[in-house]
Each structure stands twice: as structure tokens, then as C-alpha cells.
Amino acid sequence: MEENKYEYNPEEGYDYEKEENEAVKKSLRGYRVVIILLAIILAGLSVLYFNLNRQQQEDYALLQADRDTIQSNLNSLITEYDDLKYQNDTIAAQLEKAKEMVEQLKYERRLNYNKIKAYQKEVGTLRAVMKNYLRQIDSLNTINKKVIGENVSLRKEISTANLRADVAEERASELQNKVQQGSVLRARDITMVALNANDRIISRVKNAATLRIDFTIGANELAAAGNRPIYLCITSPDGYLLSTDAMPTFEYQGVKKGYSASREVDYQNEDLDVSIFYKGSGFIPGTYEIELYMGNNQIGATEVAVR
Image 1: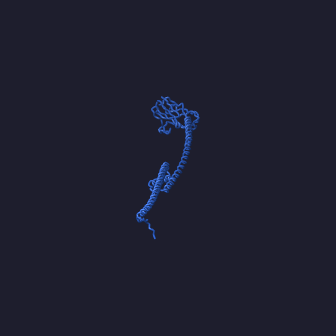
Image 2: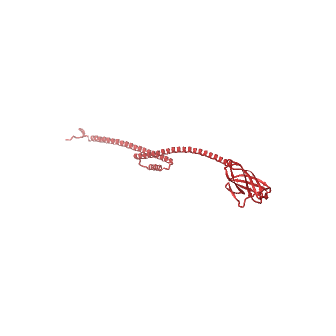
Image 3: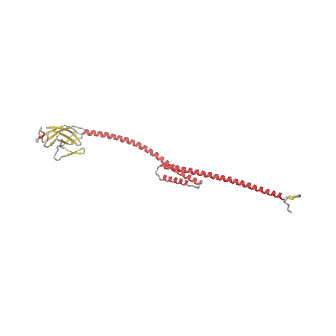
């Protein structure tokens, strides 16, 4: 037989209300425990969520910082590549690649560890390539400086040698000029006499048929011996060159010059007496100009007054 769960009171009978209150209290205590447990679990979840969210934010902030660092390194590399100033296809390609990576990073919305590592690796590769070219450029600059130094030294030696050669050539030219000037033959004691048709000397030039020009070519050891043509130019008192109908010329310092008469002599480095004859008529009294030429040199000149 089942035991009665309600307490019996002889005076009042069974106390049903008291028993119900105790049951309610037990239920409330159970709810409180559940609520407390739920609150603890909720608090724990909140703390965990907060920690996870904060960790994600920190990780994302670190990824953004890494991205900014990569962008800074890429911009630095671009500047350094631009500063190389060399026309090189490889350098140009690396420069374009760095610029493309900068543009990719600007519009990158989903950052993660693997992408950041990949970008860092690419930047490292670009920097290694640039350092390799910088080493090559430094080596070329060193070689270039050495070559420039050698060229400067060589130019100085060449300049010194050229200067010495110029000085030697100038001295040789001066010496040659002196020799040439010293080797020029000179005519002295130039005179002119009038001759009649019988080759006798006369005092009146108007009666002359021939003018004889006498002179002496001086001895000169520097001059070359041998046959030499001599050209005679006689200018009358009225300023006309006496010449034949053929008007012969010779070349004097690159110019054709007319002459009155000429003669070839055999010069042997000794004094040589020479006479040249000009045949004509109609001579007038006055002062005659006489010039003697040998090659490109005037070897003598004088003026002779006759009656």
C-alpha cells in the first residue's frame, strides 16, 4: 500500500499547501542552478568570442602592417631601379613586375599569411636581382674609372709626346727655313750699260740697241750646285716692263710673272760673274728698275739712271 506523501495533522488533517510550497521551492532552486550555469556558459562564450575577435583583429592588423611594409619595400625598389638609369631589358622587366605588385597590393581585400609570405618572397627576389645588378654596375664603374685613369695618363703621355714632336717639328721647320734662306743665292754689283749695234758701250741710251745687265752671284756653300735659270726684269722710266713680242713669263711664288730676258748658269758654290742681254729699241733716258729672279726668290734688285 502506497505511503501518503502529505503529512497528517490530527487537529487539522492533511497539510496540502505546505507540501506544495516545498515542491515549488525545489523547482525554483533547480531553475536558478540552470540559469546560473547558462550565465556562466554565456559569459565564457562571450569572453572566448571577444578573445577570438581581438586575436583576429590583431592578426589582421599585423597582416596589414606586413602589407604596408611590402608596399614600402616595393616603392623603394622601384626608386632604386629607376636610379640605375641603364638601358637593360632585365632591369626594365623587374621594374614592371615591382610596379604590378604595388598595384595588386593596393586592391588586395583578403589578406592571409600565405599571400603575405608570397609577396615577401617576391620582394626578396626582386631585391636580390637588383643587388646583383648593383654589384655588376659597381664592378663596371671600377673598371671604367681604371680605364679612364689609364686614358688620362695615356692622353698626358700622348700630349707630352705630341708637344715634344711639335716643338721638334717647329725647330726643324725653323732650321729648314734658315737653311733655305741661307741657301738662297744673292746677286751683287748690279750694273747696266747701253750697247750699240756693234756691241760697243755708248753713253746715250736712246741710241742703244742692247741693254747689258752685269752682276755677280755670290758664293754660298749651303746652296746646291748645278744649272740655275735666272730671269731679268727691266722696268723703263715710264713704268713699263721691257719685254719681247712673245711676252714670256715664269712662275714666281705661284703667280705668272713677265720678264725681259733670261739665262741659265752653271753655279758651283763660287762667285760667278754673269751678264744678261736685252735687245730692243726706243729706250729713253731716266731711271731703270732692274730685278733678278731665281726660282721663287728675288736674288737682287737695283735702280740705274742713264742719260
